[in-house]
Length: 118
Image 1 (cartoon, rainbow, N blue to C red):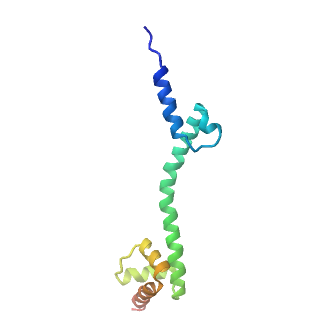
Image 2 (image 1 turned 60 degrees about the vertical axis):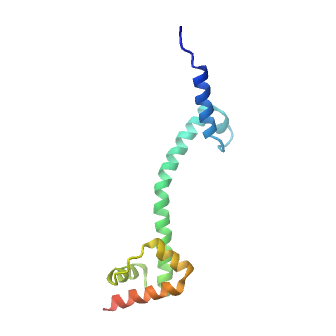
Image 3 (image 1 turned 180 degrees about the horizontal axis):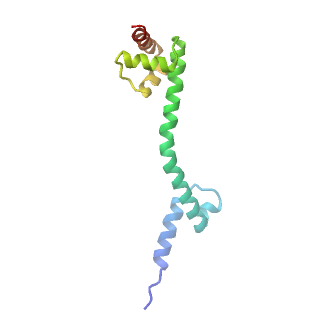
């Protein structure tokens, strides 16, 4: 007796269409289009999880640079001064300080300047 795929196929289609919820038009309703779009969207998700890390680093650098320039330094000299002063704060923390507590960022910038002049 041959094996029929009715139940298995139905479950597979149902599972895939459930994952395709939120897609537009036929990409949500038709199995083949939904499958193609789902594969593509998973590729985008994989790629963009890595891209997100780069984007945040860029954002932090822009914010640190803007705050450093308010303290008469550019980004590269500011970061070099931090290295010389043995201040080990990462870019995420520095960017947060630049946005939310500029007075403490100014103190760090002064320490960076002092280390550069030595």
